Length: 94
Figure 1 (cartoon, one colour):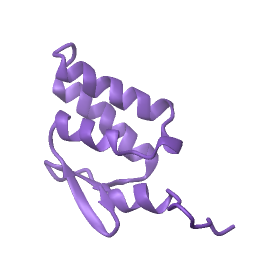
Figure 2 (tube, helix red, strand yellow):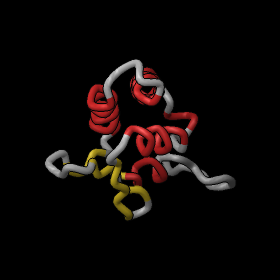
Figure 3 (cartoon, one colour):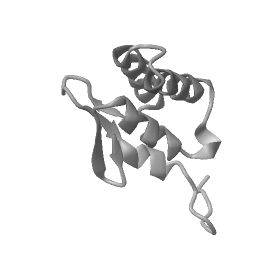
């Protein structure tokens, strides 16, 4: 993922869960909840880590932050996460 011009690699369910915890509140919808639930289920050994990562990859693809699927470690566009979140006291251009 790329956040603020940096690429963040996600290569485990716990890293995916940590990333999701930092996701902007106003952007948390159905796909976000599915990814978070899948990561939580994998951490609790209720589903496989591979299945949870597939759901997380879907989240990354839908939100437009997936950078490189071919890499063994997922690269996410974390800049998208930050650039769409208004900073306090800053107006969003129309």
